[in-house]
Image (cartoon, rainbow, N blue to C red):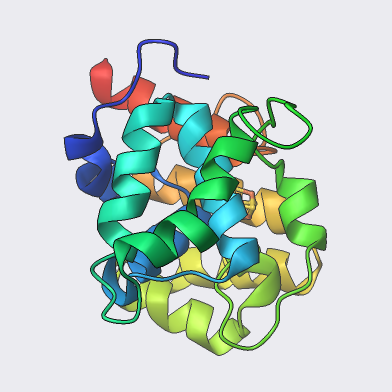
Length: 192
Ligand code: SF4
């Protein structure tokens, strides 16, 4: 967890450079559609909390993004979406301060239509994964094939660690087991 805190203005560049695929997907969808279904909201919100986005900044970011949606005004936001932020920070409901989801939890989640949470290595169609890795991330065919082979064998976290390695020119210090670990290791490399 990053105790120094994260400035909301950095979220877009952080997403581009340091988020794992699962969170980059959610963040990008949230920014584009100004909406996420429940599972995605929770997965992203707890991750952002884990990287050090404060309660106030999270609430502001959430409100700004949701109310860009033409179907959501401020009163609807307060009624339907603000509670999850308060709840996740232990300010409502059971007053439990929730932790960000681990890879295992994300990999085990079930994904319905129109939902963007989950782990891309587990939940995406292999062809879509292949195209993204080749096109968007510019990985070589050999690297992509080795990732797809791991995916086909059900080794999602190792596939994610390889993705880290190919996009950072060095492997993570340990196998990726948590999206917040991916972020922290990636950010630390950039600071070196
Ligand atoms: Fe996210 Fe973990 Fe899947 Fe990587 S392995 S994409 S960090 S859930």
